[in-house]
Image 1 (cartoon, one colour):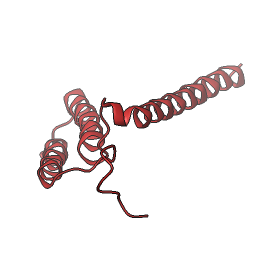
Image 2 (spheres, one colour):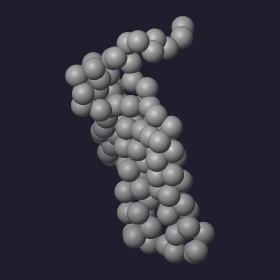
Image 3 (cartoon, rainbow, N blue to C red):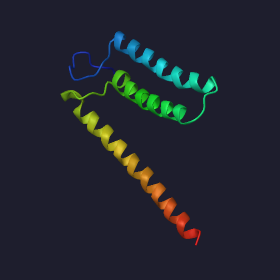
Image 4 (tube, rainbow, N blue to C red):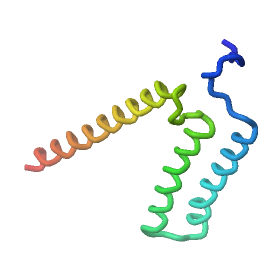
Length: 107
């Protein structure tokens, strides 16, 4: 199925948006990589990796998937939020169950 150029609701990015997203992605990858390769260890490195990973996800969503708060993207945003919440519930529930089983198996 080809993209409909005449559809104003279709999310298409410009070359400038893709370039900015690509450069930000490269920067957000180089920062933690450089810290680890320089031999740094500890909580600062873990915190930096976590922050840059979260920023990387936001860059990917905004610049490449064109997910934003506009009227045309409302259903896509709702579907994304639903997916994130479902994964979070599954992850937290699995950890909770494993912790409960571990506590009861150690008795």
